[in-house]
Image (cartoon, rainbow, N blue to C red):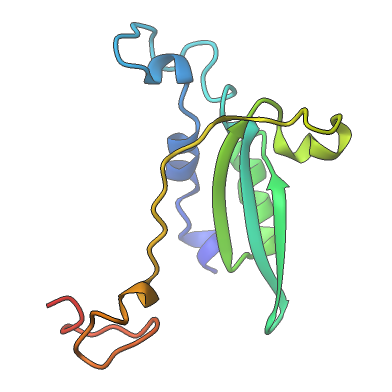
Length: 139
C-alpha cells in the first residue's frame, strides 16, 4: 500500500534528474534544457533489497530506469524493504552485463552519511535500543 499510494516518486525523480550543465555555479544554461532529466536519471544506479520470504533477503544491484513510470513499476512489483540510490555512470547500469569488462564507470556520486538509529545506542540514556525510540532518546 505504501508504494502504491504514499511513496514520493515525483520528488525522487525530480531530485535525481538534474541536468549536470545547470548544477555548476556560474553556468547560465537554463534548467530544463535539451539535456534535461534524460541526462542523469537513466544512468543512475538503484539497488533494492527484497524479502521474498521472511528472513530471506535478496540484494538486487545495477538497476536503472528510463522514466519515473518505469521506476514506479519496478518498485511496486518488487516491494523492496530497502532502496539504495547509487552513482551516475557513463552507461545505464542495467546494461552492465552487455558491456565489455571495465567499461561501466562512475561519473558522479554524492557524499553520503549513513547513520542508523542503532549507531546511537551507546549514547542514549533512556533504555531504548535498536529501532525503538522515545521522547527521552534525544535529550
